Length: 212
Length: 212
Image (tube, rainbow over all chains, first blue to last red; front, side):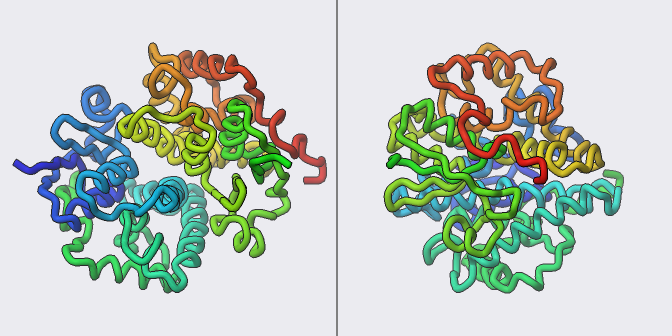
């Protein structure tokens, strides 16, 4: 039996952040499929026994159950000893980018991709608004990465693993990445890390059934 | 001269989280007005010298300059010794709610209030979408607060100070709080803390000039 169990589904960028951390760290882990598209995360049972916030990822490690990708990544830096910080100042700089990501990058890319790919509603004023916000976040991140291999310091940290959560699906997100050369170079660097895998190769549930 | 300088403006819920922390902790602090409505946070100068993310709050404390309210609150638990955690498990539980807040509560209430109050565009598909997301977050928080005085443990922490950032403006946000009795009780408890002040009484820039 694997040491870590990750409740997730293939299309979840937030779950991918954690799956990638586990895989790149060589952890003993297994994914367990959560049927988000059939409403499993929003059931009373899921909220009571897994996550009151009604979301994946959920990580189980012995008696410990954790939710929110940023919290799980923080925990795994401690138990796995990888992708963490050298001191409290660096811990806060990593947290700064994880908060930015949850609020302004993944926070807008997640619903934008969901509305574009999984609802069949096409372009609306809401997708336009979300794209505008996501583009702002891309500009901030691209400028930050100018001359830098990774987001914080000279090595990959959980800040990188959080920020890249939705960025390996450019076609599904539908934002032209061409104006962001630093983001493209940084993503290539992450793909070069030993053990890197794409989201659909790390978690179950892709492709979706045609009837979904 | 005050020990802490907070760059902010009265209408910023993210700045309020930090202002309230400083005020409730009895810190020596002063607010400095940032003219968000005239675009100050988006200038090249602001991004280069204050915050590459183009946002307030920005806290200055001696040689230290910090951004992202969640990071600033984390820092202030250390320097002020208030509203923090007892151990690493509690630190992560607080972080879990701060991430939830940045992504799903303040993260949606901020733009919802901005679009409703400060743009003059009235109700749109975007405000409807944001309200739906914010209502979901209210339901999660209200259920969590059932039988609890505060979000984590039996005392106020920075999780409470983060989550309440936009909730003292119910009229400006335009969401009916009646269905959330636990949120209402919890907010009353925060208002009863010695030194509590409303956002417009803590930070400069209210009311906006009529021409804004």
